[in-house]
Image 1 (cartoon, helix red, strand yellow):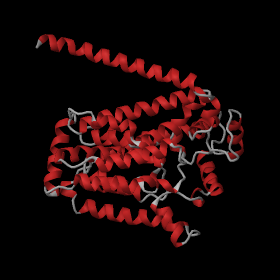
Image 2: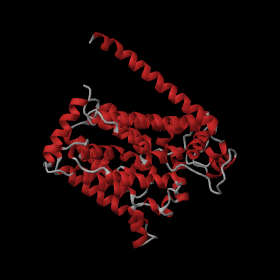
Image 3: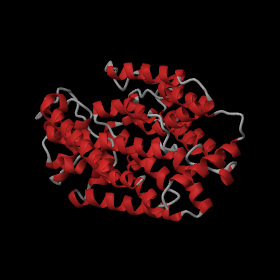
Image 4: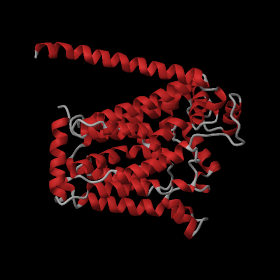
Length: 398
């Protein structure tokens, strides 16, 4: 027994060294194996160009300046790639202003990979450290692969939600601060956010709110230090670009297209209905609420009802997918439905189907259907919730 205990730290150190070496190898491959022109024609370039502008105190939403910067590194489009993220999200892009396009892409890609790795490890812990390796399938979840290929933000949302699930009981202040990346796309999380707000009030868990507010203020202050007019510039950009003018492959986008393409407000109806449902769903279960189970259903509905979302944003749904996988294994249900859905989605992503394509319209409903199928059981909901909370309490450090 003593030898085993002594050997354990060495095994951990060896594993850490292998991990670091692996990340270094990936960094070398990314830097030397991809051209600057290829980097410039990915979504990542919008964050890099915004960082270039902001670090020099210039307007990160200036379309003409952005286009000039992007053309300078090989961008081939006619219209500039401008980030629609609010200034609070530009804290992530700010370091890119210090790097070349290719070096920045290497760092950005590694950050995405690290966020995915940490998220999958924590999800493995939250699901009871199972002996199987099913959690590793998260690395090939199509929305995550789409994030890695395009350089999008979805995996940062994933890490934020996973950290919240892991910390909200034991470290509420940190759990609130961890949710900061979600402020980049608040429309993606509105039903979930409303439930969280009601839960905070019900449980008097105000440190979560304080943690988020502190992180929000800090992340707002940094961009303002470089550009004091950044919020007004962001507002002007939204008026000029009109984000919702084009088709968005969401259920809300299709609803607007069917009812009245000129009526933007129609696109927000599903989110309003989803928020109302989420508040009702929480309130009727407030005494036995579990973010580790019921909260994941609300998260699925939040993304399904969003007025503006892409397949890369669906990376945030990995906790619900894996929760369903483990529940299906425990109950003896087939994994074929999620295998087929994930496989078809991966074919679309690797087949370079554009994110704006209507062919991604089915993915969120498929993930939602999988969750409902895999988590339905003969046990009552209260019994499942109590069991889930008991496991979560045992796993989270105090």
